[in-house]
Length: 364
Ligand code: FES
Ligand SMILES: [Fe+2]
Image (cartoon, rainbow, N blue to C red):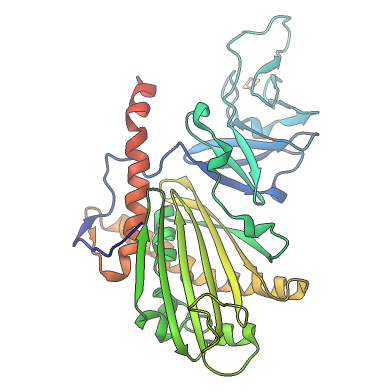
């Protein structure tokens, strides 16, 4: 792993010839609790999908367009574990194969809709949007804090009307806390403290330590001890769209920067941002903590508190997308604080470029 900071000057916002996301990746499509034994429609990576949980608990994800006349299957109904189209009654099993056609005995062998590989892990339903042969469950991003018994937490989904990469940019640089979240977690020290960016072929990490500072109100409350603190933010990006942020504070001088966090409080802000379209996304987030984990009241308070904080981001991000749309051809300029976001975008572009010949073949 090589530490490096670089910030090329003006950069095109997006290469119009390059897709905005790779397809050969696991994308969170829903929280586990969102998908029940009923039809649930959602657009993921520009594809309309219908999901449902079979009676054995396994989640199925099918293309949401009937083979016959393309009516969305999500407008139909479930009959046992099969989807029945609401127009002329064609039925499909959970693999997308047609099992019934009205008024005929034989079924056209080509009658099927696409089914997507599904993995349920870390409390999310993940779909593989590209070549099914490459859908390796080991590639699901690590968000284990969501169900690890040593951590407690919960989260929500935000539908944001912006390119998913604007959310990644936002999370890869927490300087914005000082300006967007000044009343809660923001503090001048975030914008002033130095940071280090490192990367590998699938990950980028931004590490920032703020030593011997007065904790902002949120963290003072979580720690419950007076005095100055050492505060950390370690932003871990995993391509193409997952970011786990290790955050916390410990009383100054108790050894947190050296590795002993036992006197402090630690949280993980878990984020996975799935493109819905090129300019909208499903943002799944959770906040997990390793202190007072038996207190459901705290889980509730934190979830609602973070909801308010993230709403501040949502307003900025949607305004940013509107400005991008209104200024075609304009570029982004990059400064030191953008190094993490630049690496995230570079790793995403590499994934996209790696699958482009394959996409071209598929289109031919
Ligand atoms: S459109 Fe679905 S059965 Fe005809
Ligand atoms: Fe934010």
